Image 1 (cartoon, rainbow, N blue to C red):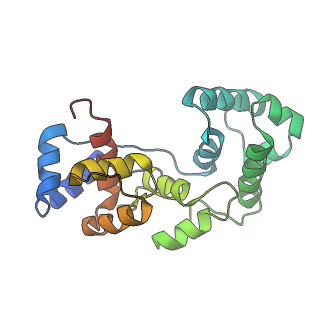
Image 2 (cartoon, rainbow, N blue to C red):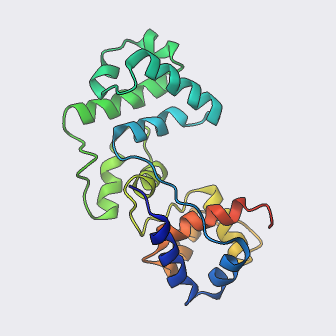
Length: 205
């Protein structure tokens, strides 16, 4: 499960004691709500389905998949369907390739999403063996589904913009700089990532 509300608050409180910018931002926008997703292949599959499409389109595709495969469908269920059946659910050729890559690895036992390496970088490397799952998707999974406390998705544009506002920077930092900036917030970078989204989305700013 993802980071709990209590864990997020504890992490941010710890950071606020050593970073006045975090303390000030907390006073302005308050604590963020948790972002929690279930662990397992379905969460990764939903990530694949949602890539480069709107939230509404992704929800529509997922509903069609569940209608075709059943709400509790397994990787094997998806693998049994042909191209045209999955295309009717809205999955492009590319998405089907990514979805089959994930389902094949899980069905064959090559990817156990309930026994990923404890080391974060090793877990990211394992997840990115799936076609269509890059570092950002892997980090989001580890943060939202596994609640790993020190995950820092520096490639996320909203995280970058949140960091820019928090640090009073003129230009939005790119991924390498955002990753470097985030090092000061170890070992609570997961809570900080969730806070940067909250800070970025706050209408009062």
